[in-house]
Length: 495
Image 1: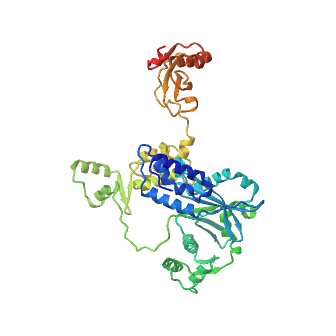
Image 2: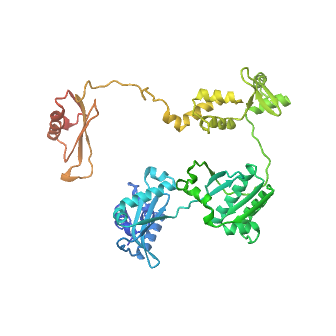
Image 3: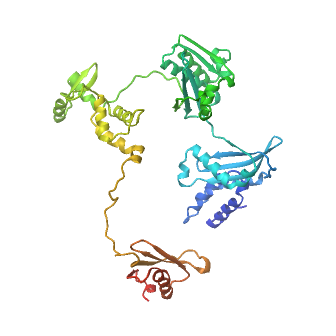
């Protein structure tokens, strides 16, 4: 099979691939470069990526796996795969320890589908496959498997009073099983220290982690050595620390966090805190904190050091402005006539304060004016607090969803050219298009100016007789005598 040399040959190639879709694993991914070539209608380019994909496709077809048929009532297995631009799946059966393919399914991601999250793409792949292979799903039990990892950790901290503090950690990075176990141990030790624990007894179902922490097993991997160093540093913060290995069956509390809906123990309300860990815990050298300058810096320099800007107008303005500020214990405060001293914060800190007031645990999604005033009443100040409040509320999805309806027209009102429906029509010819049945290649279209109602009819040729027949049949007989027809005065409309 030769490589395509023109657009028609490339179209025939993609048509053959589509016909063999059920026989080719991940057929869409193998032919994506061909589809990109077809999008260029004016120029045909068969570049190196297309040729490389073409050679791989020929090599795959030379060793094409043999498809089998399932036995009645047999359990089948569905494997799902997600790529940036396509989703794929394969339905298989197991026979004597071998996995034999039954049907391949592939779909290219179009438009908004390409912006789906990985779990949404996985769901889309499952939906597409169940629709395509509906008969298989109705007549066989099917187990679904995927290559998407589920990275996370489940932590339960039990206090001496018997209260359980439950945390579910989602890793935003790929972690092996051992790394996940170490991350869970490090995070749990940090959390226990933050809540004031001094004696910690840790339970883990990972024999490797327990033995390495105890020193029984030797550690050679660099990443594991760093974890052990962090754990050794955290041990010094406790009066007593001990880690004990328990069987998986006895670790049901932590395991149940992944099945919250099905493990509500004692029929009571459970409060589970979910955290997202963006990256792996790493040991970093201590660096000095460098704070950037903000709107408070000139005021502090003038009050403490007597420094003024070089521009005399800015210096005079700063002197007048600084009379409303005071420094106590190295913190800048603003004087207020009706409030206590207002602590001055940076714009970034102010935005965080507004977010907590607006949509925090006690937030009520209040309006812009009340939001800025509430930040003042709490005791904070920064110059752009009103502008920041307006921007924050305008970007809040819940506020936009539940706000009052806007009754003002989106654009200025315009006068209608037609006094009533079906009295004034616009008519024109569209085409020529590709030949359809009965040699039709033109489209005669008429639109009512008042209702925007459309009447259209495909025609093989446009003549005065065809236009008159169209107007009589589609307009006069349906809507009555019209007052005016607007056209481009072409010769077909002059009869």
